[in-house]
Image 1 (cartoon, rainbow, N blue to C red):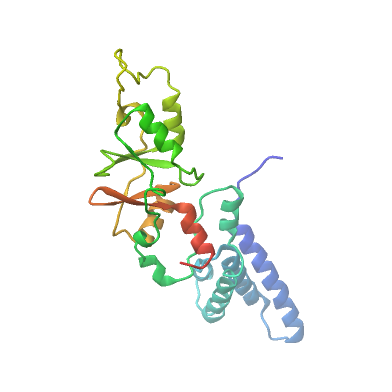
Image 2 (cartoon, rainbow, N blue to C red):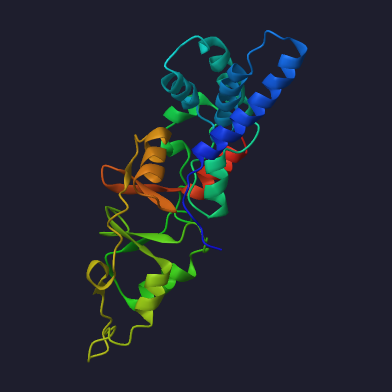
Length: 260
């Protein structure tokens, strides 16, 4: 079957107008002075607002008809349709979930948008994995052995040292394991001494994902994650020092549980 792009908004608009006209015809049989065409406009606006979760159908109706005589019923219908969308999932949101696309979490509390990410991040050595810039094979093996792997938070922060923890970039656990299996790297000198490699040179650091300042709010993080740069986790820094990690899956879970 050949898929032809025909949009979603227009078919939904027509279906809503059809149901509205049907209801208008029924009302016309009951009350002879009823105009069925007006119910078409109201039905189209209400159905489209409920399916898409937007209030723009009201403006579209006013522009299409070039009159404001139906302003009150159209606005009321759009508000009712939009309110019913809170119970169900929007059409675009359900399409994104069916294609496993990153979807914007539904935040239940307006005040949560100004919540600092320091209250939502993971902290502590067990939850914030750091690896020094200059590391030997044994250093990397020990760090991997001490890490409890999480499919949603397997990133390691490359820092200048484990004491200062100044953030330089991030690397995944898969890259570190592949680094250990790389036969071209020399981990010992000819005298048997341990050789430390520069991870910033031998690893492909992901520089596209920025670190977050400790004063970043939840709204700024969501705007970054779902509008420009989406990542499974973000490292939080205080004056350049790594202090925590924000995992996107944790935020989605807290939103679904009504915590934020």
